[in-house]
Length: 315
Image 1: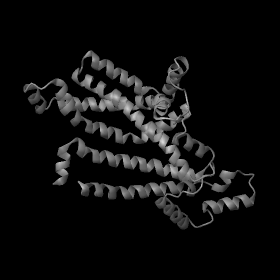
Image 2: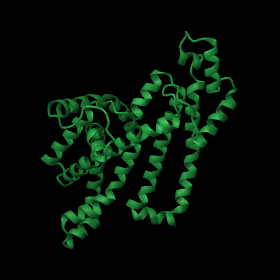
Image 3: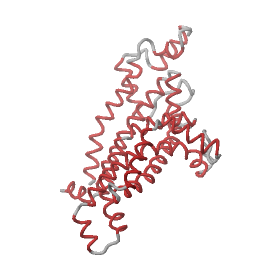
Image 4: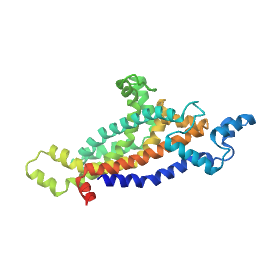
């Protein structure tokens, strides 16, 4: 198993290098002078010269890439033009909020999708199945920004149960409370995808011989479904979840701006609007590596969910 993990990590290195090249190209491929874009056309020649030296634009392309790559290795992306502090510090502080929101949203999606998938699979082609599938389709069709505004209007303004924006990290309870509406917004986008995939896997597993054998031996239906069928069906759910990480990150960007959450979503919008290229490069690399790492973790989790995969890799 250790050999497989090491091999998968080594296979991910070329992809990370490609993402690094893509992040570096943010400055190289920008038409015109990046320093001119950042400071505006009324900037003095002296201020342009200083900024070019700060960004390393006065060096050759190869030297610029080497400096950028060396900075990536040690985690030094320079100073943010917008925030006037280390890019690593800015991204690190915002990443905590975004990752918390993303994890909370995945939890919400699982709590919604798993019961829906189980009921739909056990009541296949009956009225509960039809109602749940129709509801999932309607929810998935709703734009995330519109759904977020709707939740903020009802549960924030009218009922007053949750704040309509901002983030409070004074305690874990306050953090969960302020991120509930954003997490539900993102989770409602993901839940129909997971429910549909899990329902298909559950239906397939319920037709297998080991399920009939377990029922014949008198095992309770809850034990058969919960302990055996559900676990074997979760592999497809992990796959769908890992494949949609990029969409989740983009959805988080929209939701963070709707609810004014100080995460990576609002940060990248501010960086693009202010043409903060060092910050844009770091965020591009962060999102790319996050997708790669999530797919790697999903691949490794298959062995935990299905012992047959673990045994086949040992052979």
